[in-house]
Length: 148
Length: 121
Image (tube, rainbow over all chains, first blue to last red):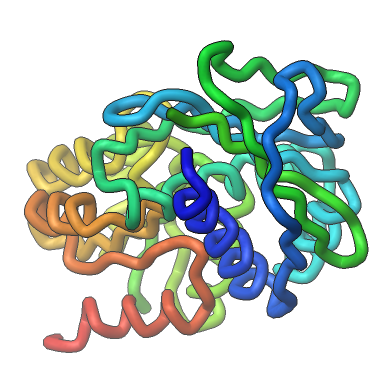
């Protein structure tokens, strides 16, 4: 994954939050991260990537961001099940949108959602993992792209 | 009043679509979290229009469109998917969908697309 390809994910994050909330996310510079030190927040939606690429993309967020997004969308039930659902849906949407640039052989799995910031997300050992940090509603979250 | 069935594995997306289109005069007659469920409910719920996700556990949306077309050739199908590549949209249209809305979507995107599905009536 080169810088230009990472920019695709940066643009998708910016578009997603602007479209869904009317308030763009502030996206920081992507950085290469040790797989053992990858950020994990309260809810993490993980998408497996196969086809012409291999690896995973995950979206990880504190519950406050997800809760605020649900409320803004008119959803009054902000139970953990719906927060997890939203984390998975965001991961799915970001990965699915990436097919516009990577093509239809960039195959994405259905999301798997991990609950808890004490969890570890396994990424492929032979694939570099990049963290795209961002902030929305004054709270930090992360997109991790580990795709070759 | 048009009868609407919503097919999506995300509960919050089903709710979002139901809220948006319910306020625009569609009656929600079925909610399905996967393709298998959608094919069954399509027979019992007799929808006029279906919003269809593509990436779902088990039967995906493309296969679901194919099967629904076999039992109900007249229902209008609007794909609502995160898959933003042209090939997926073309495949969905080829299988019998009439419209495509890419996630993330606004209420306006949905109502406009639904309006277009029925513009020739």
